[in-house]
Image (tube, rainbow, N blue to C red; front, side, top):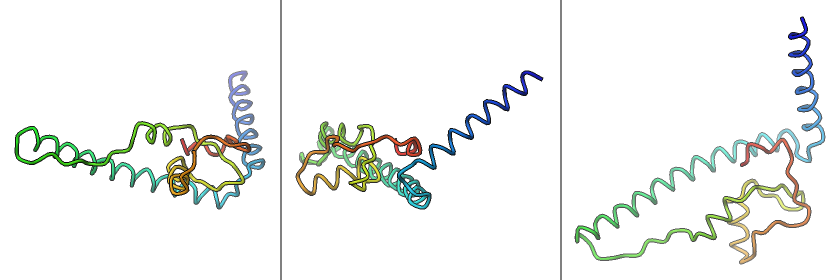
Length: 130
């Protein structure tokens, strides 16, 4: 009996915590649904593009190694770019970015920095972003 009471108490506490976190979230339920779809699509496209780029780079290096081709440069993101998109995502109600890649692409277009800004928060409902 005590075990069932403990299980019910933990379940109730988790349910209440989840409800409160969603109610206090600065993000609407429809925006959250869009956000999840966006991140899934971005991840799928990133994996496809990364595989394609890795295959091109590997083929270029193998061809050069065996003397089948002249050296040609292939653009690969810098370590700083990889670091920037690998940072922990922070939500800022003043800026509407859906991921670190989205933020990086927007800031790169403006030639700005991708550093954290005042107002960045880490809502519990956005744990799927990272």
